[in-house]
Image (cartoon, rainbow, N blue to C red; front, side):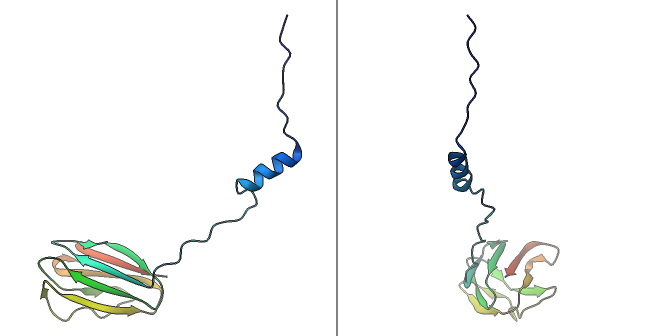
Length: 124
């Protein structure tokens, strides 16, 4: 004898509850707020992190972990970098970034605006 075909039917209220519980209301989660202060470490031939985000009017501090380095700002918007090459241990900053944008910087000893020891600060 053939088996009867069964069809799954969800009651409308249960289906509506599943839709809301799974985010079906169309709402989105806001992006996280960027920190008001970040620190960047200068290693042998790299910045860590190489790209980081800070809130507008936030501050950035660079910390030398090895070698001799400088910080040169390039592009627009620009910021004031170090005036000389410094050996470790050295800390530069905090520098305030009041205007939103992407600030590119590099170490002239180990990089250039195009590559090598180069980093970016994104100000939101």
